[in-house]
Length: 362
Image (cartoon, rainbow, N blue to C red; front, side, top):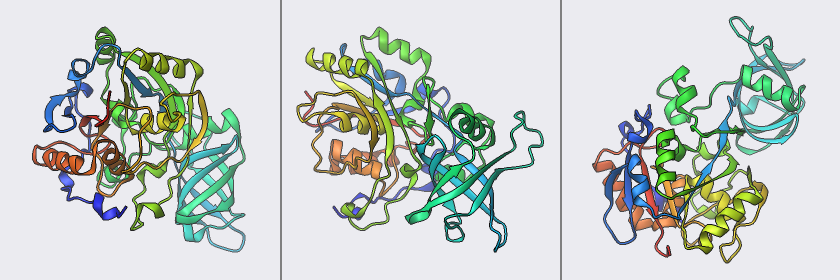
């Protein structure tokens, strides 16, 4: 499909720079097929679903994946660079988006970190070698540390990777360390938050359980590719970057039991949805699953597993707006987004949310 079909005018002041306080006080747009959008708030969620429905949460935990350092080369000047980690390929290797990409080449040595002044951790430097270069600044680093030692170094020297549309407007601060993490985050590895989940509080999770809603955890480590704009003119020409995920046997069995009993699968965020659809059989059965997925969902895709989707409001021409348009229909989503802009909804990672039901939902 033409990418310009997913374009719309979004005023810059609609991009939220801070989340709602409290988290579950954010606005929620409810959209049923064929009905006009309704204005609710996130804490209304338990009453908008049925007992027996299943909420599927992505329990990935955001790591401080933005590294700053210096490129060293015997035959050239030292160059400052920034690397955004986005896919771990081995105990000692990460694929990253690096800048300035044109000044890097295979074999370059890089040192990440600073002087260590004022740091609580004794580690002040992390060295690596560039072992592969790809398109769009994609670079593979082989670090001198591996496994837990590398994890510790990244945690000590990295910065929280706020999305560029927020980071361009203000610096990251201590409040973001709490705000940009779900309350149920457990498995470290993401470089972007599953932002629909940022709206949940312990009280809201308890209210969902009290309303008879089952909760299931899956893991998809969100990559920095989620921030990348679609530069192609046609969706067939866009390449999604792979992300690593897992659905345990216990989670798959719980989801299949709920579906067999008439419950609906409600994905909390596009990351949970993409993982579920990657693991679903044609009949909707969800199998245990682990590995990488680069699923790219656009209108025309036939959903197998997910009946409803809670998700934030996305940017024009983004793969995420394409996904919600596939789920609820392009024209209904364009109309809903027009309404959201008119009614003052806040967009993107720290913005408001929506609850979408697909047309063929049981």
